Amino acid sequence: MASGVVEEPKKLKLYSYWRSSCSCRVRIALNLKGLKYEYKAVNLVKGEHFSPEFLKLNPIGYVPVLVDEDIVVADSFAILMYLEEKYPQHPLLPHDLQKRAINYQAANIVSSSIQPLQNLAVLKYIEEKVSSDEKLVWVKYHIEKGFAALEKLLNDYAGKYATGDEVYLADLFLAPQIHGAIKRFNVDMTQFPLLSRLNEAYNELPAVQDAMPEKQPDAPVEAMS
Image 1 (cartoon, rainbow, N blue to C red):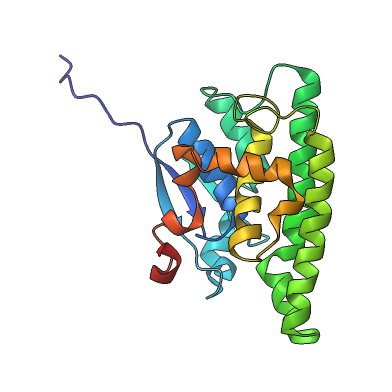
Image 2 (cartoon, rainbow, N blue to C red):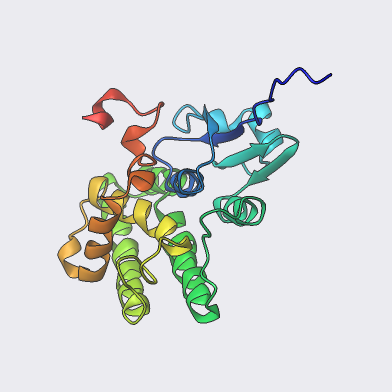
């Protein structure tokens, strides 16, 4: 006879760093889909992503990494596609093929043409080889170049959010990138009215705000103020 005890579904595990915009994308998706997860902090400043244990999960040593029982997925784009296929609640992609393509394109502008050029390793290299001042010039140039392209790309598609009135894949990439541009790099957002309007909408969404860097368990106290 069955005991009547219902087993709790096993929690997902997310290996994340508080300030990682790539990790933030996945945190937003998990929140939108209502998926509980265990937060596994990886301190990039201390080099924990180069530990033998972490490199077994992701040989290139980047966060985020998602563990779903015996399945391990690294890279935010791959994780988001995995979540979309396994957990279809709150779809991250619209049915309309053109809008879907715009979501992919906007996400790729962030993930290929902005974020890699401002990550910790690149900024550290510029600071060491050139100067600390040049680091900020470099970052602002690439963020502003990418944001200018996004303004043009989304002009004919944006509604309340990037490609309409629902939160989709593009928004998951845009929200942390805009947040970082403002908070970390003091980018003047008056140049980008469409992105500024989207940012105001993101500020009203609990699923987005709860995923932001300062809300994470490994965020330093000064970041939470």
